Image (tube, rainbow over all chains, first blue to last red; front, side):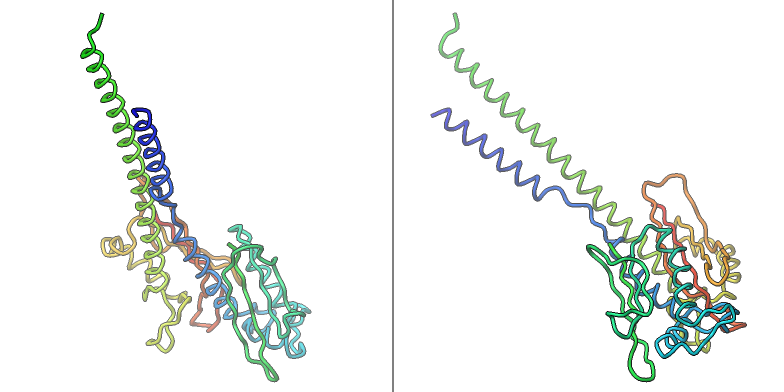
Length: 151
Length: 158
């Protein structure tokens, strides 16, 4: 009879320990990381599309260069690059100084047809990502600029 | 030889001893859980504080670009305002300390050319957490009406 009492006490202690371990310890939250990555994608695209090119490409904005890139590459910059190449090298330079420096993986795409992107940088995110899509009007259709920030 | 009643008293004392040991172990465990939860909450408060400071800096009228003086442009910093803001922040240290606490705010232009400005800096040696928030922004040159690409870095200590 006493043994039975002891067994019940031990079982109760085990149940209490399991309960406390599962519910008691709060997981460390990461509110900041989630805020930062969601802000990062939209701010990065916003700022990138607004950026003016250097003097060697008539200080056109990246939006204007991407529009031309999707519409037949009429613009030739003074350094010999067409609009697609110039926008691509600018994006690469900016992302190297930001995402690569912060060890953040990303995928940047500019396209009218997603199967054949005009510009593609970075790598497809394997797990979680924060995505931002900007439509840009062009004469015949709409082109899209998409940035996925992984993590 | 011990009498029967003495043995029973011994048993009771042993049971009470084990009982109190269990209570002490339970209490220590409970205190540890509470302490760990408090640390998590403290960390969460620091994170929220760092976010709110970052938000304040991002929407600071002293730095933000304005369109036709009235409409403020988001994610954009007016290059001409930076120097004025640096002076104002030095002159009104207490006011800005209330807004940003112990933190460091820097703006770096990375395209078309590299430039860096330290806007606010108030540091302490006594901190447990350090959060660095990088916010990509446009840097507007009102004289040329062109936009550069920059990064607003907010380092908060708590």
